[in-house]
Image (cartoon, rainbow, N blue to C red; front, side, top):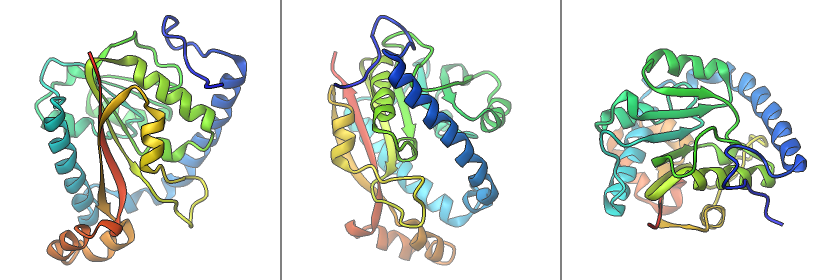
Length: 250
């Protein structure tokens, strides 16, 4: 059966089996984060290819949020699941939200510390997103970015999805960003295709769009030609990621 989280027991797993699965994934993810930290400079936000990829995904995400009537406004509570060292929190600030509007949960305490120092007035917590420490319908917008691709256990994926749905307020939305294709060079991540995104969130409705020029191409081309990178990203089969904005009906 589908493993979920009881709607009247905040953050408490339904059974010990799902709790054990979450614990195993938690340990694996933390170990993998340590390995990834060795190549962190490759994803530095000042690199031209990172600026290119972030700009393009932000443009599409903003358009979908406006179209869905879910673009966040100052004073509305927003949550990022897996904010890392900053995640989309900086984007939300640039869109007009205040630090006090921002909430987040991050598994890795070392990464979380960086974001907490950057945004001391935000409510940024360290914890496991399979048991979110917030009440039902707490947030107007929830952001989850490159999280599901790092979770290999389908039970844990379902737990995450149920918790995310639980804390979205009626009329609120989910901003989802992740890659849709497998990486043959890394068996610790997996692609999350369009069909799986929709299956994970059956009670939400909205749009899913392919975005982001394949990172190997972006790294090779964007540093010397933004125009060529933009033209290549217009070719559908060269886009490797998905942006989705899914809304919860009132």
